[in-house]
Image (cartoon, rainbow, N blue to C red; front, top):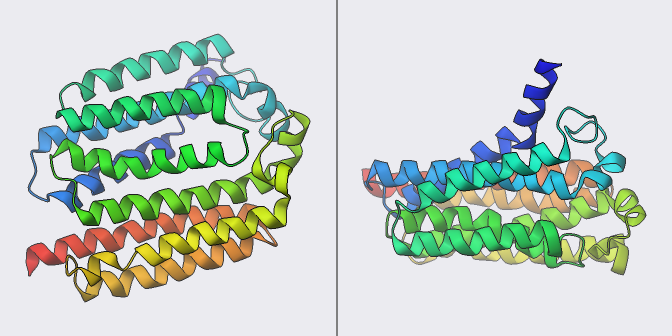
Length: 280
């Protein structure tokens, strides 16, 4: 059916995740320089959305056998899109991302190049290796903020903290998600962290990684970059993230989901922090 095929291609890019990644790039640019060139910001956001969609699509291509167990309703396992079509779709999206990236400053191009390598290497090499794949995903998520800042030529301390908070919290979330997916991953012979060291040890490690992110979060306030409004907002987000990891010990599905959304909420604190410096 045409309708299901169209829906299948849309599902491949995970539009929610792709748009969210583009929004993170915008936030990185805003936190770095709220008065930056909108053309540069638009190119960076568009490149991020296209690259994220491409990464999601090629990940589904390589994960099609695992998804038959863990996610049978995804586009490829249910037959809405063929593996070859998913691969070709990802190549087109990567080409769009590259065209937009070439409009940006050199540092942004370098970050995009590193991210492209990391994205392809993750889907082909690192996914399923104990902890390494989690680190790559964490970096890629946090780097959206760096990319946005680099696009406007201003990588500030606040952006670096935002990168650390996003990267570390994502690593923690990915570990919890691996605990959730242990059954399918084990059948596919993957050596994810929970399979190698056990689910409880993995969850403890996720809590430690997240604690490092929480410890980094007050730095913009301590340095005087952001005011009290930032601190008032970021502390509840920190507590919610810590609770999400704790929740993962009894319910990994809910824990990883809540951790994802609490990270998005934490970015609001950075936006407010930057906005108050402009108003003030």
